[in-house]
Length: 542
Image (cartoon, rainbow, N blue to C red; front, side, top):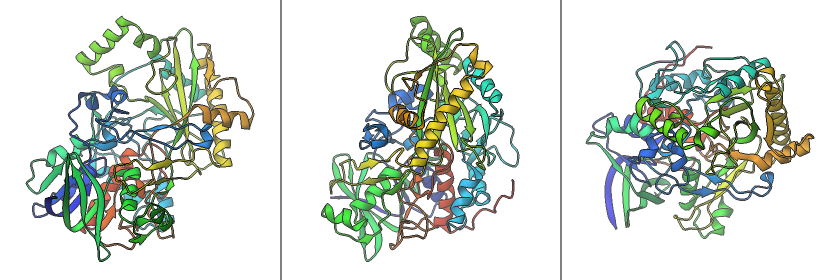
């Protein structure tokens, strides 16, 4: 068995968090850092063309290819569950939407006992890496960082009509979802540069690649964490076709995501004792919360035929339209090939009594039966709506001791009464928006969900039939001090030395929006915690 050497820090996973950590930890030339990635380099052209996510999700070159367990709330359906397996991780295959979430999300983390994780604490870390080009910089935004943010490079009359209809329904127009309360309707800001995807590999890893103290190993899948005397000291892995080891003198940092990090802990004897015993794994450190507390955003896809206004459906279904789309991108880096999966967004309240929005819309000038299938041949648009703060909780659990076997992933969508009621109200709200004059003139016809459901039970059932994940799994190694917490507020694994978790799995509760940029923030803050730097001064902006 070959050795990859000994390093001060070994980071597992070169994704949204891992690339940030590799950059920040290796800034000191005297610190030796190793970055391990189970996938390959991000040199696949479809990673970089924004619409290429269609060719990356489900592709073994870039995606782990997970599926969920059948979910009763979805009528027994299983869903594909894309997770990045390439340099840049999920930032190489995701929807590129730049979103921080709401101030209340982080203040809630702090109220749960996680010191240093309130909104004013984390804002400086969002700002640290931001390179904002979509709107003017101010006290809430900055330029010059690594994490590029731009406006979307397209226009659709149907999206403008939806935005006008939302305003008529009482949802105000805004120009920035990232000021602490994201209420309103606007086009999403995206992590792109001049019409190309901007992933964390480009942003953080490439600027550091020539540092002699940083080694990146691709096609290096970790099998187990070596734990000696209550401390993580190294890793067993498979690199290419060879078994190998690597040693860490200071710390191992798991940045393998909400699926990979709990899976590795469980395989290494850290997790729920009953689960580990069931699979013949010696319990090294019993932590019942490892793999539990899985949260995700389920989007309910409402779709409408329209008349007298163009959509991508008919353009993409004609030869001339396809040629035009290709030329527009080749010449100007604009048009449908520069599109994020969702273009227009809205944050709204399902109940006016709520303090902040609890629903997020992703609106698209297209429709299809399900992901991966062709667009419909008739003009239509999709208004997908997600409950931002679901009560449903699921799990990630190994199914045996084989490190190469996928774990069982059960999000338990729509498993609570409140989640089903909010799903029903979400569809009703969508109908109210579509019925406004700005859209009514295009004679919208609802064809998803089918059969015109009306009662709470009918609507909840319909939501389960058309609902699909927007790939925001969090919470499976949650931060806290209760019995189910896996890491403390320094992101150290409880009961073990020499190991931390730094990715979306540490979120005690899901953020109110897309989760990629919060992970970048978590990694920025974690780097200071690991190095021992003083935290950045809290921001006092409202």
